[in-house]
Length: 253
Image (tube, rainbow, N blue to C red):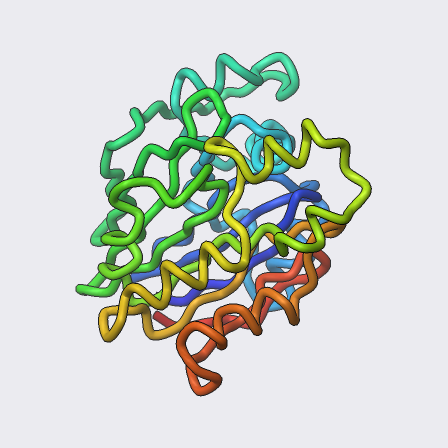
């Protein structure tokens, strides 16, 4: 498998994965024109994508799903609860294919396992993409380190792993207390240290690499997120960064 992030953060999310001729986009939180340009950075044509798979109803993951469908002719895979929570913002959709959280979707020889999360969305999931005995986790908007998350991280060969905030930056930042409580609460986001603890606990079963993802602009810095993971497992471990401003490199699973 090959993968890259088009963008990752509260300003918009979309991740590309290809396997055995199948091209998938996970989430549609950036504009169609920007997605097209960022795909082209790595020589990919967004019109050749086989499916757009939506994780949950928050705007930074779904706002452009209607544009992706109408402009590029891409089928949208989404749960009914997620679509019902946001359909009025998407415009007319001609090709919607429903799945249920917990389902496994199949695209040729590639499989996409969907895993429910406690994130404060209508019906949020994360993804494990499996092909040729390799597994890639797309693990953001997690809520908290819920039961089974550790086992998922141990089972994958690589992962996009949420590192949303630095606890000190959040505590001393300008966000109102209610929003701070939401972010670090049961339905919010994982901090740098929470993700590092998960990675440390994997021991020898940890993924071959991770990409720190979904970083907050106000409450985190890429170097803090990366340093936290290196502090947990050592500086020789490959830690990438999925940027909120540009396409990432292409990574291999």
